[in-house]
Length: 275
Image (cartoon, rainbow, N blue to C red):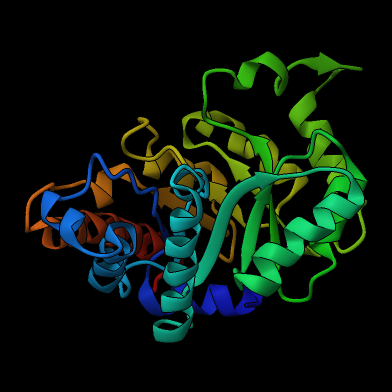
C-alpha cells in the first residue's frame, strides 16, 4: 500500500484509527476459549466489528510469540483474513525488529513476503545497516521508533549531545538513509508537546501514535501539534477498544469505543480540512 492510498482511505472513512490487536487469553471472553483458535476467533470478530471505522490494524507480535507455534499460526490467520476480506486496510506488524544487515533482511522477508504485512516497526539503535534492509521493499513501510510513550523513554531518547536531543538526531540521520521515503515513525501520544519539533524535521511522514486512551494521551493535543496537510497520523488504540467488554457483547462494545474515536477524528478533520 502506498502512502497516497493510505491517505485516500483516511479521507474515505474520515478516520485515522489504528486498532491494536494485542490478544491476551486471560482477558478475552471466556466462551471463546472453547474454540479451536481463540486468538484468531477474537481477532476476527473485532475486525468484523470495526473494519469500517479503522484504517489500520496492528498486532503486537509478542502477544502471539508468547503462545509458541500456535500463536504464530493465529497471527498468520489474522493477517490473511485482513488481506483477503479487507484489502484496503493498512497492516502493521508491531515487532520492533532491528539487527545486523543480513538478519534484518530475513526479518523483512518474514513480515513483508511471508506474512504480507504492509509495514513493520523497527528499533534504530544499531543504525543504518539494521534499517535499510526493511526500506528496500517497494510499497512497504518501516515504522521506526523515534520518541516513545513509556516511562524509560527519558533514559536515552531525550538526552542532549552536541546541543541536540538524541531523538532529533535519530530523525535527522534516518532521512539520509536509502529509500528513507518509506519511513514512518513511532511517537507516543503522551509526548504531545514534542510533536511541533518533530514535525519540523519530518513534516511529511506518517507518525504512528500509541498512548491515546488507556495511557492517558490526548487525541486533540496530538492532532493540534502533529497533524500535517495529509493528516499524517495513525492513532493506535488497543486495550480501550478490544477489551471494552469481556462478555458476549464484546464486539458491540468494541465497536462503540472505536466509533467514539472515529467520530472525534471526523470532527477534528472537518474543522481543519472541511471534509
